[in-house]
Image 1 (spheres, rainbow, N blue to C red):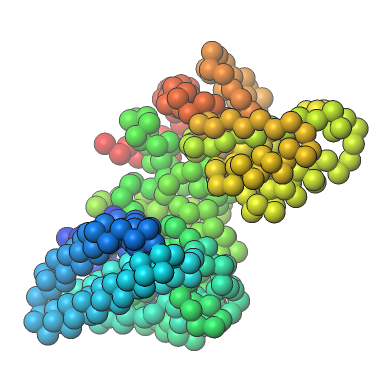
Image 2 (spheres, helix red, strand yellow):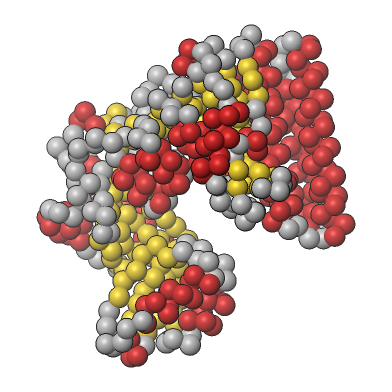
Length: 459
Ligand code: ASP
Ligand code: MG
């Protein structure tokens, strides 16, 4: 069987849904499970609703609800079969009505708990898959719409629920019976707690849902359909000459995803790695292109892609007590742990530790708590630029080239990731484009700098 996951932009309108359904239809004999995100920016609108309802802003809440209702009905209206259309429209109206009731509840108590937020956010995927399944049936495809909450089983850390993997795998095997000629449609992003309450896996979590389903059913492959031609050498909005990388190792992709490449969610990779299932990243609007294949057995080494992560803060703790002391780092990390903030890069000297975080929640509290360990300095508006590739710094000439081309750009932190697949540095946010452009020119645009069979042009 195969899993085909479509992101929000790939199902943003009936036109896009039709493209997605056609892609699934072409592989009906491979027992496909189509996993979908919410249509377009629906999830963002749902987040807006939680905020506007909680602050008692009825007008804004109304506007977002109307916009969700309209966009989904506009799609449903294009279903040709009168019968399928009227059932689908009625379901959309019913979902929107439930959503309105929840929003009214939130506006009455002027508070939206994480649990209620998840109940609200789940409607995005419930609505999109309802319409996708109806359209597939409308086109004469044997279709079964399933409810992912029946088999993505989570704990109750709402808004970022943790999946109970073994229980979910068993439930997926029990309830998602694939068969040749039948299209199964499932929601990404949503799950259910032990006590039966709707939860979500965190923003962008649909990829993870897809990988879990693929892993449970030992899929031949998981295809992530998005709006770009796979994983690129770098963000094409920063460097117009960016190209698709056709093959990537899991490690490289995981590093890239972690360091902010928008195409694949980092935790997507894990269930697939564990079961050795190849993951493809492909462009819904250009199904003729192969996109990027992430799999074991990639042998290319050296710099393969550049990733950036903006809105990073760097926190430095200085203390002479660090000198020859043990347990100091542990105390620092205990503070991060308490605030549930994860640290990306760390550099240390005898008397200071610098850490980058991409989360500026709780900065004031963090600063206060770290203050008992030393003097604390926080620099905001920083960015991480990462070079990713297998054995990237085995060849010390790579490091020399990096610093050679970056002469003149102030570099705040450097980390040669111990995994051998990344070399990361922190620069000021305003230096990102310049940094990435220089690196791209050095590593990808010079003759022979990139094996020709490894790239396909996007233009
Ligand atoms: N719809 C959810 C979001 O926008 C999940 C996803 O798209 O993966 O975050
Ligand atoms: Mg989305």
